[in-house]
Length: 334
Image (tube, rainbow, N blue to C red; front, side, top):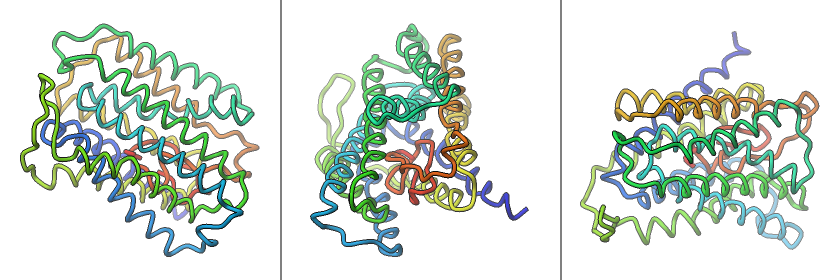
C-alpha cells in the first residue's frame, strides 16, 4: 500500500490543474489575462525560492555556469511568453479546446528534441506526435460553432504559438542540462528571473486594464481577490503535488496521470460553463488526448537515465502535464 501512496498527490494534482483551468475561463471576463500572469509569477516565485533555499546548490553566478544560466533564462522567457499567449487565448476561445491544446506541448518537445538534440524516439512516441499534430490541425480548421461563445478565431494562432513556445522552452531546458555548471536548484532561480521578465512585466503593465469587445482599453474594476488568486493557487498546488508524487512514484505513471487534467477541464466546461463542442472537435480532442498519452511513454532504456527537467511543468510552471523526477521541482498553468 505504501508503494502506491504517490497516487494520492498525483490524482490531487489532476483535479487541481483541471479545475484551475476551468476557473480561469469562468472568471476571465472579470480578470484580465495580465492579472492572472502576475499572480502566477508570484506563486511560482514562492515555490522556486523555497526550493532553492532548502536544497543544496553550487554558487549561483559563476563563469563556468554562464552558458547554463543564459540558456536557462532564455528557456523560461519562452515559457513565460507561452503563458501570456495561453491566458490571452483562453479568454477568446473555448476552454475545452484551449485547455487540451495546452497539454499537448510534450509531443512538440519530442519533435524538437529529435530535430535539434538528436534524441531518438520509440514507435509509440512517433505515433503520439503524429496524433497530436493531426488533432491540433483538426481543432484549428474545424468550422466555428454558431451557438458557442467564441467571438473570433484569434485564439487559434495564440494557442498554437503558446504551444510552440512551451515546446521550444522544454527543448532548451533539456539542452541546458548538458552544459557545465548545470544545477536544478540554480535553475529554480533562473526560472524566476525569466518569469519576472515576461509574466511579471506583462502583469505590471497590463494588469489594471483590458480590451473591451470593440477594442477599447478599459480600466478593470476591482474584482474579488479570490477570482485572481484561487486558480493560480490551485495550479501552484498542482506543481507541489507533482513534486511529491515524482519523489516516490514512477515517472512513466506520474506524467500520464497528472497530464490527463484536460479530462477534468472538459467536464467542468460541459457542466459549469455549458460550452458546446462540435462532433468534429470532440473527435479531434479524443485524438489529441490519446496522442498525449503515447507521447509521454518513457522507453525502458530511458527510465534508468536522468531525464532533463520540464520547462513548463517544473517548480516554476503549472497546469501543464509531464514531469521529470530529476527536475524536482517539475509541474503546470504555467
